[in-house]
Image (cartoon, rainbow, N blue to C red):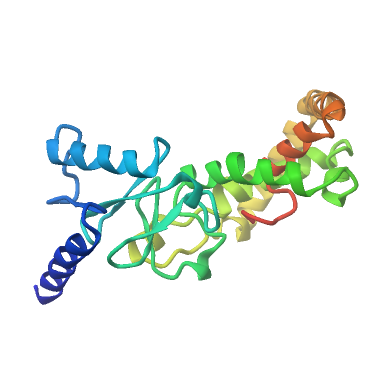
Length: 236
């Protein structure tokens, strides 16, 4: 009770200091769509931060706060510090990162990892890498390219995603799926089965994408590789 009282006092002080920077809701799943006070607060913040401003919810402090889009697409990506508790909040699932730097490549939800893949990694690869990078050339080798992509997809969608148990405990932990012998056997077996019918189609796609992107300084192909973070810079 004392801790809750301290939080409420801190919120009141923050409201006075920051004026209209936060909106306090009453309970966890409160519906705000038809709340006139919330709509007024939201409109005023969007007017201040811009039409592409993003709203965050801190469940611990029971507040909403706003951030510029330009700020959340910078590292640590789609996270913003709560005005009160200072913990980093995920824009998509509102998970609170207590120890942010310790879990740089463990992700709380699919939406965050996929948005990083498409809107952070992809554009970054088009600007920073050239066609002579080793990972770039590997994707032009038949069979090897499909095998590498299967591994990357598995890591991005399963291995790098935090377990539900660890999210509830507040300290993110990766899945142990990749350490399971049974999973490895199934993974290899599935790959061999899929590689036979998919080999020609996949390589046709890869080479077509490569040739199509040549007139544009390989921008399209590098963006494709960036989605999967093939150089292990952002996600893996």
